[in-house]
Image (tube, rainbow, N blue to C red; front, side):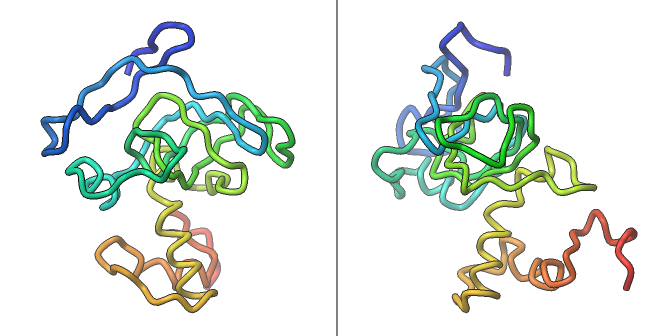
Length: 173
Protein backbone atom coordinates (compact mmCIF):
# COMPACT_ATOMS: atom_id res chain seq x y z
CA UNK A 1 0.00 0.00 0.00
CA UNK A 2 1.17 3.52 -0.67
CA UNK A 3 1.26 5.89 2.30
CA UNK A 4 -1.89 7.97 2.77
CA UNK A 5 -2.17 11.57 3.91
CA UNK A 6 -0.38 12.76 7.07
CA UNK A 7 -2.51 11.70 10.02
CA UNK A 8 -4.10 9.06 7.83
CA UNK A 9 -3.21 5.58 6.75
CA UNK A 10 -4.68 3.03 4.41
CA UNK A 11 -6.64 0.09 5.77
CA UNK A 12 -8.78 -2.71 4.40
CA UNK A 13 -12.39 -1.81 5.23
CA UNK A 14 -15.45 -4.08 5.16
CA UNK A 15 -18.13 -2.18 3.22
CA UNK A 16 -20.88 -4.70 4.07
CA UNK A 17 -21.00 -8.35 5.14
CA UNK A 18 -20.09 -10.73 2.32
CA UNK A 19 -17.31 -12.29 0.30
CA UNK A 20 -13.89 -10.87 -0.56
CA UNK A 21 -15.48 -8.41 -3.00
CA UNK A 22 -16.79 -6.33 -0.04
CA UNK A 23 -13.24 -5.39 1.02
CA UNK A 24 -11.89 -1.99 -0.01
CA UNK A 25 -8.69 -0.13 0.75
CA UNK A 26 -9.49 3.31 2.14
CA UNK A 27 -7.82 6.22 3.91
CA UNK A 28 -8.63 6.11 7.63
CA UNK A 29 -7.29 8.01 10.66
CA UNK A 30 -3.94 6.92 12.10
CA UNK A 31 -4.24 5.02 15.37
CA UNK A 32 -2.59 6.58 18.43
CA UNK A 33 -1.06 4.40 21.13
CA UNK A 34 -2.44 4.76 24.65
CA UNK A 35 -0.50 3.99 27.82
CA UNK A 36 0.94 0.48 27.62
CA UNK A 37 0.55 0.25 23.84
CA UNK A 38 2.89 0.54 20.87
CA UNK A 39 2.28 1.78 17.34
CA UNK A 40 3.48 -0.69 14.71
CA UNK A 41 4.28 0.09 11.07
CA UNK A 42 2.81 -3.08 9.57
CA UNK A 43 4.95 -5.02 7.09
CA UNK A 44 2.73 -8.12 6.86
CA UNK A 45 -0.43 -9.62 8.27
CA UNK A 46 -2.03 -13.06 8.30
CA UNK A 47 -5.50 -14.39 7.58
CA UNK A 48 -7.39 -16.06 10.41
CA UNK A 49 -10.75 -17.76 10.51
CA UNK A 50 -12.08 -14.94 12.72
CA UNK A 51 -11.17 -12.45 9.96
CA UNK A 52 -13.25 -14.44 7.49
CA UNK A 53 -16.17 -14.63 9.92
CA UNK A 54 -15.93 -10.89 10.61
CA UNK A 55 -15.94 -10.11 6.90
CA UNK A 56 -19.07 -12.26 6.52
CA UNK A 57 -20.81 -10.44 9.40
CA UNK A 58 -20.67 -13.36 11.87
CA UNK A 59 -18.04 -12.04 14.29
CA UNK A 60 -17.99 -8.55 15.76
CA UNK A 61 -14.70 -7.05 16.90
CA UNK A 62 -14.50 -6.62 20.69
CA UNK A 63 -15.85 -3.26 21.93
CA UNK A 64 -13.28 -0.46 21.87
CA UNK A 65 -10.95 -2.22 19.42
CA UNK A 66 -10.07 -1.52 15.81
CA UNK A 67 -12.95 -2.04 13.38
CA UNK A 68 -10.51 -3.37 10.77
CA UNK A 69 -9.62 -6.97 10.07
CA UNK A 70 -6.34 -8.54 11.13
CA UNK A 71 -5.72 -10.45 14.35
CA UNK A 72 -1.96 -10.65 13.95
CA UNK A 73 0.75 -8.75 12.17
CA UNK A 74 4.47 -8.15 11.95
CA UNK A 75 6.39 -4.94 11.46
CA UNK A 76 8.47 -2.30 13.20
CA UNK A 77 7.69 -0.33 16.32
CA UNK A 78 7.10 3.30 15.30
CA UNK A 79 6.07 4.78 18.64
CA UNK A 80 5.83 3.77 22.30
CA UNK A 81 2.88 4.70 24.48
CA UNK A 82 3.48 5.96 28.02
CA UNK A 83 4.81 3.36 30.41
CA UNK A 84 6.03 0.88 27.78
CA UNK A 85 9.33 -0.70 28.77
CA UNK A 86 11.40 -3.45 27.23
CA UNK A 87 10.79 -2.28 23.65
CA UNK A 88 12.36 0.43 21.49
CA UNK A 89 11.30 2.32 18.40
CA UNK A 90 12.69 0.34 15.45
CA UNK A 91 12.33 -3.12 17.06
CA UNK A 92 11.04 -5.79 14.66
CA UNK A 93 7.99 -7.42 16.24
CA UNK A 94 5.01 -9.61 15.57
CA UNK A 95 1.82 -9.08 17.53
CA UNK A 96 -1.42 -10.72 18.53
CA UNK A 97 -4.20 -8.20 17.94
CA UNK A 98 -7.89 -7.75 18.68
CA UNK A 99 -8.06 -6.29 15.15
CA UNK A 100 -6.43 -3.78 12.83
CA UNK A 101 -3.66 -5.81 11.23
CA UNK A 102 -4.99 -5.17 7.71
CA UNK A 103 -3.74 -1.59 7.86
CA UNK A 104 -0.50 0.32 7.40
CA UNK A 105 -0.30 0.98 11.15
CA UNK A 106 -1.86 -0.62 14.21
CA UNK A 107 -1.68 -0.20 17.97
CA UNK A 108 -1.11 -3.23 20.17
CA UNK A 109 -0.72 -3.76 23.90
CA UNK A 110 2.99 -4.16 24.64
CA UNK A 111 2.26 -7.45 26.39
CA UNK A 112 0.98 -8.94 23.13
CA UNK A 113 4.23 -8.40 21.21
CA UNK A 114 6.84 -10.99 20.36
CA UNK A 115 10.24 -10.24 18.89
CA UNK A 116 10.65 -11.52 15.33
CA UNK A 117 12.50 -14.81 15.93
CA UNK A 118 16.06 -15.07 14.65
CA UNK A 119 16.07 -16.93 11.34
CA UNK A 120 12.46 -16.05 10.55
CA UNK A 121 11.60 -13.21 8.19
CA UNK A 122 9.34 -10.39 9.33
CA UNK A 123 6.78 -11.42 6.71
CA UNK A 124 6.76 -15.05 7.86
CA UNK A 125 6.53 -14.02 11.51
CA UNK A 126 3.16 -12.33 10.87
CA UNK A 127 1.54 -15.78 11.00
CA UNK A 128 3.25 -16.74 14.27
CA UNK A 129 1.38 -15.01 17.15
CA UNK A 130 -2.00 -16.75 16.93
CA UNK A 131 -0.47 -20.21 16.57
CA UNK A 132 2.16 -19.59 19.26
CA UNK A 133 -0.41 -18.31 21.77
CA UNK A 134 -2.85 -21.13 21.00
CA UNK A 135 -0.16 -23.79 21.34
CA UNK A 136 1.22 -22.21 24.51
CA UNK A 137 -2.27 -22.37 26.00
CA UNK A 138 -2.75 -25.98 24.86
CA UNK A 139 0.60 -27.22 26.14
CA UNK A 140 1.23 -25.17 29.23
CA UNK A 141 -2.27 -24.17 30.36
CA UNK A 142 -3.89 -27.49 29.40
CA UNK A 143 -6.52 -25.89 27.18
CA UNK A 144 -8.00 -28.21 24.56
CA UNK A 145 -7.17 -27.40 20.93
CA UNK A 146 -9.83 -25.74 18.84
CA UNK A 147 -8.47 -26.64 15.42
CA UNK A 148 -5.57 -28.57 14.03
CA UNK A 149 -6.13 -27.18 10.52
CA UNK A 150 -4.49 -23.89 11.55
CA UNK A 151 -1.06 -25.44 12.09
CA UNK A 152 -1.47 -25.67 15.87
CA UNK A 153 -0.96 -29.43 15.77
CA UNK A 154 2.55 -29.02 14.29
CA UNK A 155 3.85 -26.32 16.61
CA UNK A 156 4.02 -28.02 20.07
CA UNK A 157 7.09 -30.15 19.28
CA UNK A 158 8.82 -27.07 17.88
CA UNK A 159 8.01 -24.98 20.94
CA UNK A 160 9.27 -27.78 23.11
CA UNK A 161 12.58 -27.82 21.22
CA UNK A 162 12.60 -24.05 20.85
CA UNK A 163 12.73 -24.29 17.07
CA UNK A 164 10.70 -23.31 14.07
CA UNK A 165 10.69 -24.94 10.64
CA UNK A 166 13.11 -22.22 9.50
CA UNK A 167 15.88 -22.84 12.00
CA UNK A 168 16.00 -26.65 12.28
CA UNK A 169 19.41 -26.78 10.64
CA UNK A 170 20.95 -24.63 13.40
CA UNK A 171 19.49 -26.59 16.33
CA UNK A 172 21.51 -29.50 17.71
CA UNK A 173 19.46 -32.68 18.07
